Length: 381
Ligand code: SOE
Image 1 (cartoon, rainbow, N blue to C red):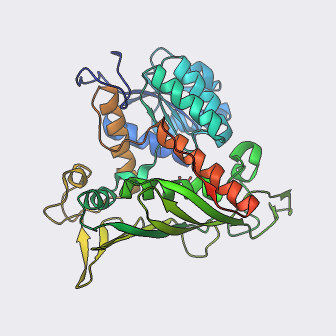
Image 2 (cartoon, rainbow, N blue to C red):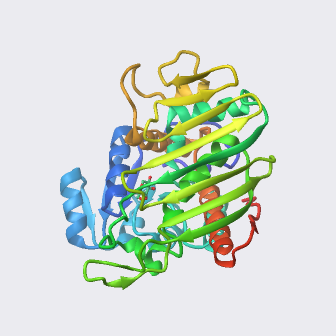
Image 3 (tube, rainbow, N blue to C red):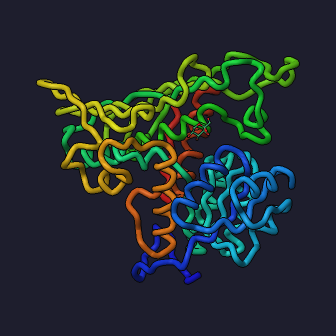
C-alpha cells in the first residue's frame, strides 16, 4: 500500500487505497463489531488471532476469514496486513500497538490505548513519528446527532456554554457473581467503570463542546469487595464514579458513571446548557436531540432537513431507517480508511484522544484517592 500520513500530519492530497487489509486481534464482542465494520467497507480481513488457537479458529470459521493465528505477533508482521485492529483485554493494547507501529502498520486500538498515561503518550508520539494512522474508537462521535450537537455549539446556537452534565450508566456488573478480566487490575488496569465508559463520556463532552476539562473533583465506589461465583477474588477497582469539573472555557459540570445501575444498559447522556439554549443527547435514543430554549422546547431529528454538513455526512441510511451502534463503527472504519488514503476526516478519534482519556483517568483516580480537586494537565500531543 502507498505510504500515507496520519490525520494529524500534513497530507499531499487524497488517494484511494487499493483495499483495506486488516488483522483482528481479539475474538470477543469488540472483535466482532470491528469485523462487521471492515466488511461493510469492503475491506479484507487477512487473519485473526485470539487468546487461544481454538477461539481464533472459531472466529475465523464464523466470519469467513482466511487465516487463524495462535501467535498475534506473527499476524502483526504479516506483509499482507496494512492495519492492525487491537481488540484484546486492556493490558495487551500497548504491547501489540507498539509492535504494530514498529512493523509499519496503521492501528485501530480499542480503548484504553494504555492503562497508564505515560505509555499512552509514548504510543501517541510513536504513531506521529512513523506517520501512521492511529485510531482509538470513541465511536459515539459517529452518531449524526452527536455531530449535530457539536455543530450547534460551535455555531454559537447555545450562546455561552456554562453547564454540562450527564452520565454513562450500565448494569452488567450488578451481580457480585459477575467476574471478568476487567476486574483484575493487572489485566483491566487501575480503573474499571471510569476507564471503560467514563472515558467515553469525557470524550463526548469535549467533542461536543470543543472545550477541555481543566480540573476534577471525583469520588469512586464499589458495591462489592469480592466477585466471582465462589465469592472468589477481591476487588480493588470501582463500580461507580462521580465527578464535578471545570473547563477551559469557563463551564462547570458533573457526571455519574456506573456499571451497577439496575435497568440501565448503555445509557450515555449529555446535556449542555448555554445562555441561549440547551441540548441533550442520549445514546439509547440516538436519532434525536432534545433542544431547549426559554420560550420553547423541541426535538431535533436525524430526518430533519437542514442538519449541519457534519451530521449529514454521518447519515448512512434513508429517512425513517434508524441507525445505531454498528453504523457508528462502520462510519469510524470508513473514516479510518479515508485517513489512510490521505484525507483528513473531521472528528476521527486518534491516539491523542486515547492519551487524553488516560490523563483524565489518572486525574479522576488521584482526586478520588486524595479527596481533593486535581488539575488535569493539558495534553498537547
Ligand atoms: C462494556 O462496558 C462496553 O462494551 C464498553 O467496553 C464499550 O466501550 C461501550 O461502548 C459499551 O460497553
